[in-house]
Image 1 (cartoon, one colour):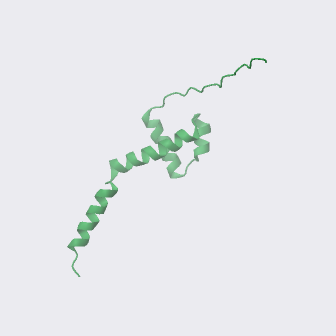
Image 2 (tube, one colour):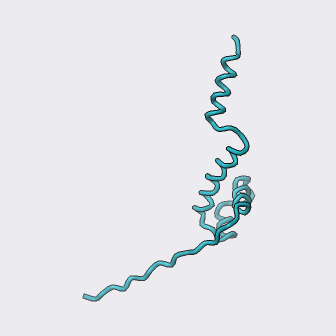
Image 3 (tube, rainbow, N blue to C red):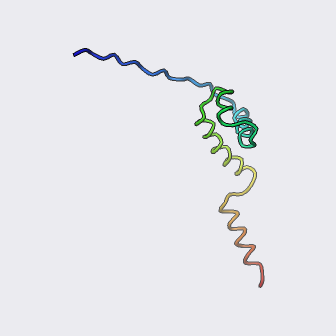
Length: 85
C-alpha cells in the first residue's frame, strides 16, 4: 500500500483589532448601516467573529447604559405594589 501524504490546512492569522474599532463595527451592524457579510469582507474578519462581538458587546452596552433584566423586574414589582386599586 502507498502511504498517503496529508496536506495540512492553512491556518488563518488575524490581527488583533482595538476595542474602539470593534465597537464601531458592531454599531454599524446593529444600526443597519452595513450587513455582517459586508463588514466581514471589508475588515477581513470572519462572520462568526462579528456575530460574537455583536452578542458580547450588546450585553456590554446594556450593562453600561441601563439596568439588568432582574433589576428591572424588581423595580416594576415594587411599582405595582405601590399602586392602590
